[in-house]
Length: 417
Ligand code: ADP
Ligand code: ASP
Ligand code: MG
Image (cartoon, rainbow, N blue to C red; front, side, top):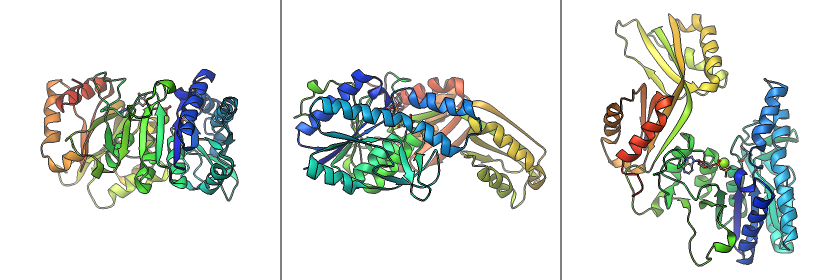
């Protein structure tokens, strides 16, 4: 029998009524002849509450205990869905990450999946016709035997990893929107749904701020060529016509996409901060003296801009970090002042990065240039720019984010007719 993974996010399992709705979706696929593995998130808001409690209990908490706490959200949903499925006559069993097991590395709070025991699931499909309801977001580190979690949004990654492990025909990601849009439809109502998007573009969209899929889930999908279909859980199962493809977005190989637009989508992240180091010595080894300590402190540096030295002796260097890391980054640079050799540092939080993504940019020149002009006309100041093969990003003041996204969305012809 063909196998299917169905993943339901937090809003899709927010209460028992929604869980009942999910159960009917699962039944629909079982009745259609699939062996089904379901992956569930915690009920909406639960993970946020658990994270807040950890922070409250100990601001610099032990990541192993953080994982012990935040993994519980998914445990509840998995058990409840299994109960509801049993209630409508479906043979179902819940699985925690440690039970299956889903092995991960030891990077608590952002662990990577190493291996999923797909054989156990397949055996139960074959021998018991049993639906597996798996708690997303969690796994176990084999050597220590401790529960791990995969980072926020990690249930997407659980789902894709399980799909790869059982050779699923598809991995359906059910969420509160009916697909991947040209940009966040909550910010730009004129955004339109994409029928298909290439893995590489989805990877950029996700890593540049679109939270509809966790970045690692897209990486895994690309690596194992899992067909990922993003769709809405709010559609009533009874209203779905099995002979028609439902609304949604297929994340697939580039070669499957016939009509390639120059720009596919726009992503943004509002929590960016900038640090400028003024009059740094312009000599070999300085960049290492700055970025080495930041890397050691686990601070993710994103954009880096270094001016050409005017006097041949000193220069200015600017970089961005997530605003949550701003204070730590400043302290790290101040501590390394004598090793780096600079005059002063300044910086600001409350910045945003807006990114334009499209495989078509590989073969079209001038895509970024037109954006700079359009933003200037809106009096939006660009603080830094980065470009790569299929995307470019601009750093701006956060309060202008929505205006910038809408301007670029219109500029590249992405507005819905
Ligand atoms: P789930 O709880 O199901 O995992 P998420 O909240 O993680 O759902 O992701 C879905 C949300 O992602 C949507 O509600 C939407 O606001 C947001 N989003 C951001 N960018 C996009 C985009 N380009 N297309 C669709 N949704 C997007
Ligand atoms: N519940 C976890 C989170 O909110 C994982 C997920 O929903 O994907 O981050
Ligand atoms: Mg999510």
